[in-house]
Image (cartoon, rainbow, N blue to C red; front, top):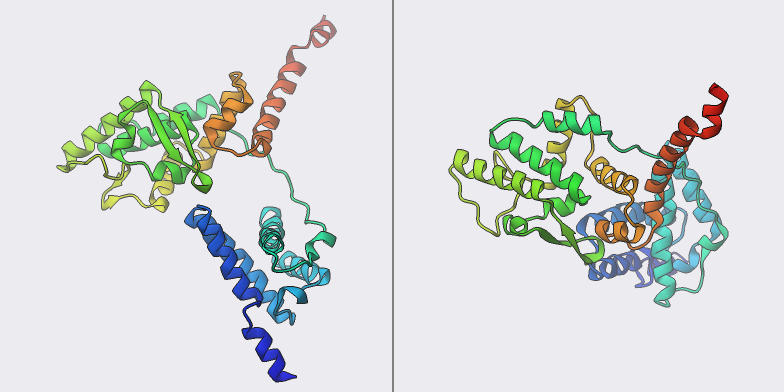
Amino acid sequence: MRQNASLRITDTNTIFTTLELWLEAVQARGASARTVKNYRECVSLFAHFLHQQGCHTLEDVQPQHIRRWLLHRQQQNLSTHTLHNSYRNPKAFWNWCIREGLTESNPFAKVEPPKREQVLKRALTPEEVEKLLQACAGKGWLPLRDRALILLLLDTGLRIHEAHALRVGDVAQDVLVVRGKGGKQRIVHLSADVRLSIQRYIKAYQTQRGVCLQAESPLWQGDRGALTLHGIKLAVRKAGKRAGITLGAHQLRRTFATWSLRSGIDLEHLRLLMGHSDYKVLRQYLSLVEQDLKRAHEEHSPLRLLRKQ
């Protein structure tokens, strides 16, 4: 029996082997390195847990194993978002296995996903944006860089990794061709103010550093050369700290979406500008705007005004 068990573990149909095939398929369809990394980390933990439960092939896995996995994750005091991903990502892996004909079993079908607390994170206020831009005042190339970065993210709603991937030649025109999630391309427009801010930063950097940036050079530079993705996120956080605001790059994207909706942008246009495949994420921004409308109605309703008389 031990020999048979050993053969099962090394068989090409093991969960670990199938997991590697799935990650290759995810990579082949153009997913970002970050997405592949997140999938690998999450689903590898799932695969190792199943192995400890005595599940070595896809057919070994039953609904009770999925429930035990979720209970195991709950005991680690994870956020509801992370806990939900602990269900969603392994399920995505399993659905692929079913589509590829690697199994007909679907243990996830009988397991409900964990509830996820819907937290509506707010957008920046105009006053906070003003403070943020004031915190990037100055003629040095560093504050000019930070101002250009903040304005770009507010003006376009780019994801931070999309902004990080920009080259100097990309911002020479008033439109950007952005490669987003899944390798999908979209057109993003740059306002004149943003283009001017970027050109001021580039000119100051070249003059003050004595460096000539080429069209193919990474747009965002630091003291030691091109900024890494972590470096560009850090630049945003530091700008927020100087302004007295706890700030993350995604909050600027959220502000772009929320302010656009408040200004009356069409949902389909916003979806295209932000590079979403559907309206699921946009509903979160709509909820923020609906809260604004509710407060406005409460403050300015004719009935409220009558009651004051």
